[in-house]
Length: 420
Image 1 (cartoon, helix red, strand yellow):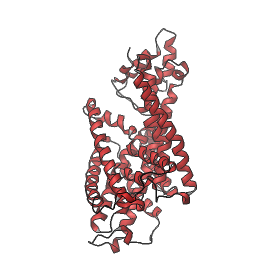
Image 2 (tube, helix red, strand yellow):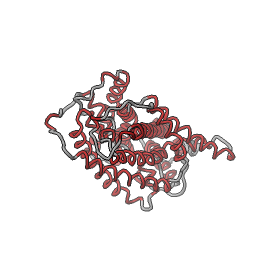
Image 3 (tube, helix red, strand yellow):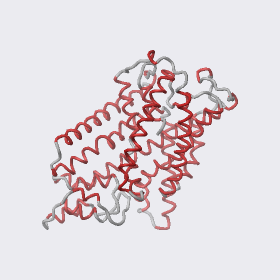
Image 4 (cartoon, helix red, strand yellow):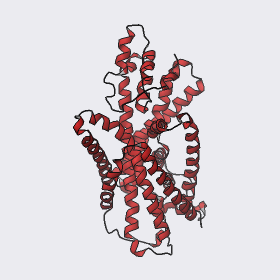
């Protein structure tokens, strides 16, 4: 039977880490003695699911693998993916904390010198009044209340608001950065390999959203149309990223901040851009938070009595938001935490695991040599980026004064996170 039938689902699903205490691997080993192939058993069990998440897709794929050891330990594939998803999504949330705090600090502390006349950022030098960590703690209780919303359909309303505010902000940012662009011939075209490694992590962070693919598809009224939505959406995003990054780099050069909004002039028009963008990121936080919450909370709730279910649920949500806040406080360097987090976990989720998943699942069905070569190449690129990108980001965190942005395309790379 074709393994593509693994993707057909039927009834209900639990997202807990202990989902079905008897793993598929155990079931398949029991039925093997009865002459039932493990792939057939994995397929039979998968048909009982309304849908599968990323971790379950990994587990079911390993169930169909010819290697007996991988079949026996297939559940660890699910645990590994779930762990990486938790790290990645909470890392995104930490980045959002820093982004909102940076922009809120500028808005508040420059309010007394903000006017209707826009001044270039380089003409305004102010000493911070309050530590950036104060602004992170100010945002914290509002995010805690936001993540108490659990329904994706409700969150989609906030996502729409985020898209509207982000679109308005983008229009104003493009309007500014495309005016009076200096001669790009004075900018360096290449960077050192160290800065390219940081660029790799930032680029992966920008485009990696694999953790939200299956949850969003499973919530669609017509999930069979998801591929079309994905291709159209990613095409638009790529064009926007390239334009924002290129024009932003040409406009600000070596003066580029970790967020392009921090380079905008000090006037009420562009202060409103920072506010709109921060509102958009605020609502997006809940959507990114949904993935780790749906992995961790069911497991925790299953360990307590029914009368304590609500308390356990809200407690875990509060604790996870606090973890993202503390992470942002401990490492308040936006660009480096993005590179580190993306190199470690996002590259595995987006570049290493998916092609390996395809190879494991469909190799027995006579895959073409082109597809095999493509999958191997993508995995190797992801592995190299993971190892060397992690090393460079850790080195920059340990030796912060060695980090130079004056002649680096790392400056260029930073712009690619602003639309996320």
